[in-house]
Image (cartoon, rainbow, N blue to C red; front, side, top):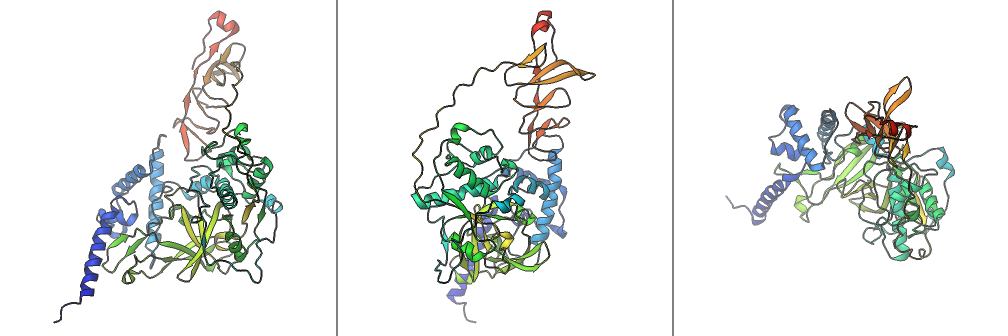
Length: 527
């Protein structure tokens, strides 16, 4: 019997080496598959609560999660289990090579995820804010590059994270302004999303959503926008800092909308600059998308390739409102043709109810599939280091997930205003008088008076909450900051809204000070 050829032996050893090496690299991965391998797999498709709790505890450590409210951890665990079941059901679909995973949104229901992170508003007023232009209307004789990536040209800042604030509209706006500013001036300057959240309030609503066109209008009317360094992001609604609002570091001249529902026009626009777009991003698969795809080699070993697989979406059968999407996964093959993995197909729900603002920062093609390079604002741990590739040139005019419905972009033709220098320090605040509760009691300046003893609608004794504009909770002993106005007196926490998972610990009231007659009589207040 002839000995195996050298190439066959080499291939066997190479496959064995890759299997062992890559399997070792899974030690810190929180994907479902790698966890199963390290813990003996899932038998009969079921897990014990102890196994799921172990995964949950590991996930909490990885994502720095902790819960202070009574019963909150248990509530989040039930949601985590439900998401885990969904992930495993979707990942078990036949021929599915792309995987969902336990990313940072795994303890949120889809309703909570949509309410917290989807921040683009499309209403009737939006139709009248359009600035139509034929600048990027496709014309006979147009010569566009086959591909472009504005990241490679230095026009895209590092990935940012909007946190638990529905400010995607601000991040989309700023990324487009950063891009055109670099293209025109040669300088990439990270600009302030927080200025838009705090100060652009005529039509936009901060963490409750907004529109990119309105934000462009604000920057134009204001004469520019400040840097992120000078006006840093906080992830919550705040009072507009007028001094920093006047630090107009980067300006734009105007803005326009790309011809609607036309992917060829969008391609022409992206060939010239990064573009703001709105998509439907509220689906459960988008919520739980994980870019570290698991690929099965001929040896049967599940390994995680260092080269991130690229994700595309394309239309399959469409309903009246919800469109079923087919995704095509094309894997890197490590420059070794015999390790190339064939494309797989999955189904994805995606409609055109625009609820999330992102940026298109490039486009290209691979394996006969055209795609957009889309920049998200959920940090570098989401997707392909903060990005996702979405198929372009599909049959629907709206584009995938509505990407071609409402694209817009800023226009800049000249240099920026003179450098204003560092923002001067705010002038000293005038001395505020004490917060007077009634004729008998007062609290320190900027504190909120909260009644601690009420009798037939009259407050007889007062306490002080050490916050301005605070909410006085009904237990007569605690209070909440104005950013988290909903009291949960049983859990001792404050939330942004009823049912929101985002919250802080409630604060305790202190004694109010007697004034006037009460001070003379030695009358005391109680907490």
